[in-house]
Image (cartoon, rainbow, N blue to C red; front, top):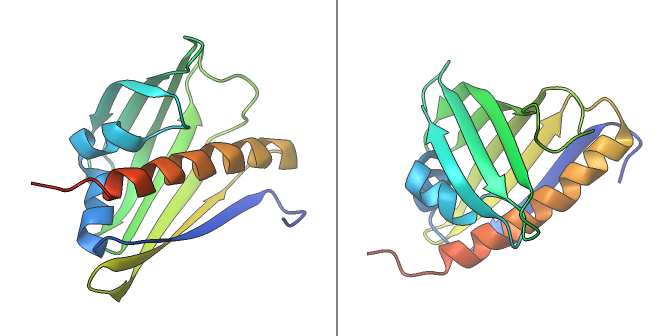
Length: 151
């Protein structure tokens, strides 16, 4: 891990790039995996267009509510998604200012996709490290979700 307040995570999924992109942009799909392990999505509003807003409410296993929101800045299906991320008042305290998340998807074959998530704009290294744990757990959930047969 670097000394810069920038987070970068790369994962390879055994799923087509279009499906991985849809998991990030379809509210019904995103609600199935978003958030750390054990968290449930209570509400999930996504206006997936440049300038559109997203807003999500999650509940931790202990029952605590966490609300986040952002604005889509760039959408290039099925290869790139850029949005802002900010915890709302009353959500997870101490996580810092609004950040920018860039999700890039590279096709490695018909059923393999490399995802690179980059989040920047953290005020502190500690804030970045909290997001490393959260995103890593969420991406584990995404990998599990992508293994479910889609009808």
